[in-house]
Amino acid sequence: MKIKIIDYVKWPVASSRFKAKEIIEQKNIDFSKDDIIFDFQNIEVASHSFVDELIGPYIQEIWKIPQNVKFKNCNEYVKDQIKFVITDRIKNPIYA
Image 1 (tube, rainbow, N blue to C red):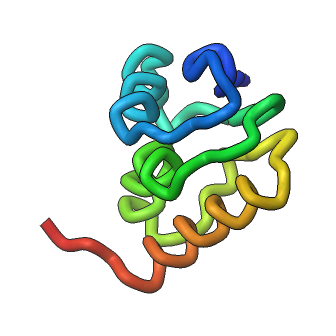
Image 2 (cartoon, rainbow, N blue to C red):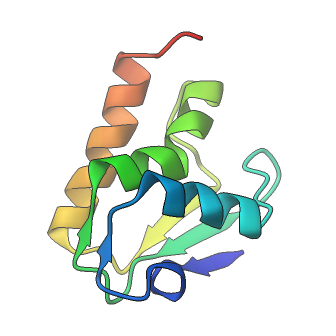
């Protein structure tokens, strides 16, 4: 499943935790079953909160870097946010 982030945010900044959650719900993503490509083409900035809501709960659930989730067309800023979220969720789990 390929998800073009720009189709949901409509401008080059992905910054809302709520928008990320909306993407997951609208696409009915099942991280445990689906192969997912998040395409960040034309996205200049993705906030920590957006990326964290997009993939953070899944990383926390499996406690590792997800092999079935890929990121495409990420600029350096977006790559840094993704790396930070993955590292932070694995090293600093949030317990409910």
